[in-house]
Length: 373
Ligand code: HEM
Image (cartoon, helix red, strand yellow):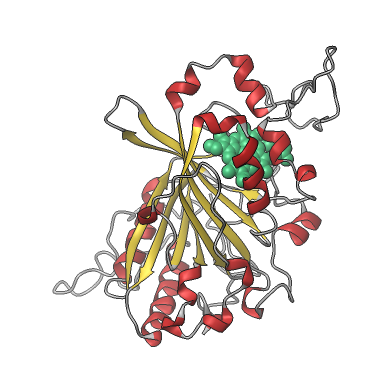
């Protein structure tokens, strides 16, 4: 596939049709110097512009530099195409403490998420000052990109946590078939998509006047690592699985309907008077009609990290959602799910992240975070 443009009004990797693979990284900034942070962002931007076009991270490349010096590219993507690589940056709440004089530029939308019932968050895999989401069709390309950004950041940032994802669990364009998550259900049917221009303007992109000017045209990202209890799920009957989501497993149609994209009828009743779509089903609780028309652009990935030593797969969903204001979108939806979703018997949220993703870059003279500094 052709390289995805690195420049534009928006950052790539949000409405870009979701690629198959993810390597996500969250950094802590360790330098105390504002100039060093700015320099790093400039160096990162130059490397990202090159790598997303299928080139080496540095101008000399893996083998073209002085033999006495470490190469300015690590080499494992030599010969591989761009593979749809996108690199999307976000700034976390902790970057806006007094270290870099950014406190006055902190958006209200970056206020910490509340504690949700049932979550079991591990601080060492949560939060962070800066995140970079690398998505590509080839895992080697995504990993190469993050590895080189981490290498360039040596001494100025350190990796706080990172996450690999192997299968998209969402569609972000109507041109894509809906993939499946590890519970075997189509995931991403009712999602904000590239083609929904009016909804994207209203629900995805930060508008001028929403907060500080540097975020106008950007979007807020929420990440949640959600462990899925695969073995318990696999012992659950098909009918119960379908009632938990409110959709059928084969086609992905709303219960009581035939086709995947049929409109959900929440008012429909069975002959015995009970709702066709159960009150505690995931799609009913997450649906915009339950939350004053709050939508999300979900862009998550499946993960499996071997097994847990207790005979179970260490597996789940690395959930990523973009939106105009997390406190009006992710938070009320998650609060409802955390309290009532039948799915909770099978899942556990173990990490959380919140990041402000600024708008796209104009051209090669621009850099990640320019409007912040
Ligand atoms: C819909 C799975 C967590 C928000 C769906 C659907 C599935 C699914 C199968 C139906 C297909 C679709 O419309 O995409 C899961 C699994 C989860 C999970 C397995 C955890 C492991 C979450 C979380 C949120 C969320 C944490 C947000 C707080 C939504 C929304 C919809 C949805 C907004 C669309 C509902 C609609 O408008 O019909 N999810 N989900 N999901 N999910 Fe989740």
